[in-house]
Image (tube, rainbow, N blue to C red):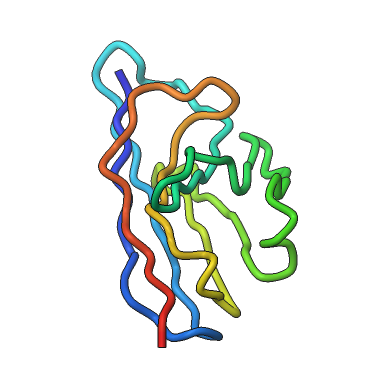
Length: 118
């Protein structure tokens, strides 16, 4: 079973930056499994949506067109870490951000809150 732990969120002013990190833990029995990963976000009162994805090979895609040119997804497979660098943040980026497998998410972590406000 894989678990995901997100961190790096916080309160930032519009135009600011944050770097989110996602740590993955793999229990014995699934060692060697590496997944295509995604960052998702859920704004208050809205459904959870896919923001960006990265394959095992490092290919990236930004499913949410509003983040293109501002967000960058990356990963360190050796360290089991996935990152989301967020620049030029806007109030509409306020949400809880989650990482998970893509395209078939497993159980969700607690996420990390990102609040963009002056």
